[in-house]
Image (cartoon, rainbow, N blue to C red):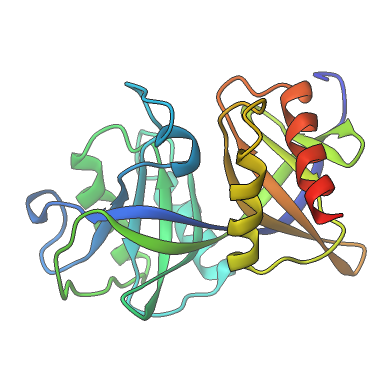
Length: 235
């Protein structure tokens, strides 16, 4: 697999996960930052683990174009000594949708305020805090680039991300039906624990709908078993 050329695509992820407000003392005053209580909820909520990925969401006060955010991130990266791993998107909760930058594995909480300051210097403004909450489920939509390694039979593994796998769906499934389908798939106790999200990529002047699977040490065999169950239930 290491010798295979990767396939670069742009698309998105749709998922639901519980979020909590980050403490006021470690972020800029009168701003709003969320963190994921249980990232990859469908997996880590069922498989207790001492070490999980850490996801932090900076809440923006308005929409900024992908180009603007990417240029801002590139400029910020030049000014800090740690690596920035982020994507853009939106969060919907309490009947309100906000635009976000999602950061993966910020190692030091002091980096949160520093990053906020750097993005402010690039013209990115943040939403003012309106309420405090803990462990609230949110609809999360992320826009991102993918780097796929083909795994055969409509399946893909993510380059340099061994815990992620993808497979194509024959048709679009809305989120509520996707959740019901995933629940049915998990009734098969022979399948290993996993987190599933709805995914899509743009290609060939069209769109390909997919399922994103997360599981630690995911193998092609694991991915195929999950894929076969989804497609069987779809009929």
